[in-house]
Image (cartoon, rainbow, N blue to C red; front, side, top):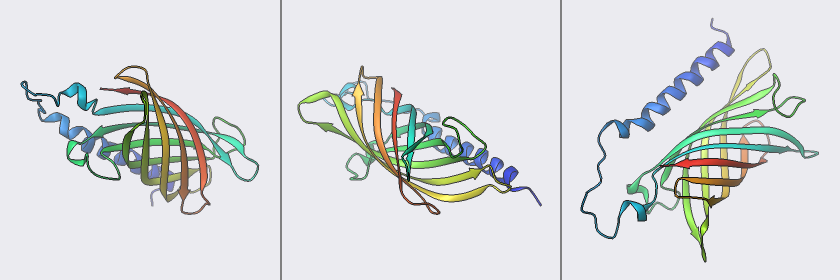
Length: 196
């Protein structure tokens, strides 16, 4: 019988590999833009890929004790989803949350791999700041006990993007997280995003 921690580690690596293959597959076949495009040029459509790194904190209830919540992920915008009310950018992310006595890291932690859908929207009278919603589902693995425990994860975010250039921005977000075995909790994050 394989130990749960080995299974979880192998599952996480296989999950990550499968997600990256699914995400990168469209880039393996030449996606070319028409050279003679009219007003709907690539510049007006914006970028289609995001690599984001966010550092944040859970505010654990009761007591609002801060805990590290770090997130890295990648997203790709699909044109055929532009009119979808939920979102047009599909994402894959990994999140580490500390659940022990310290802030940054302890043996007790939550490792979450999630898929999501993001919807970006403009704000009135500004092009420097935009908003977004982000709905994610995935698997959270709890470590630090003799058996790794895997649970369903749901995260729903509302955020603002401060654009420095077309390819560089800062994201600020508030996320309502739900793991099947625990009550809702919130996470506040800020991070850097590189787009292309």
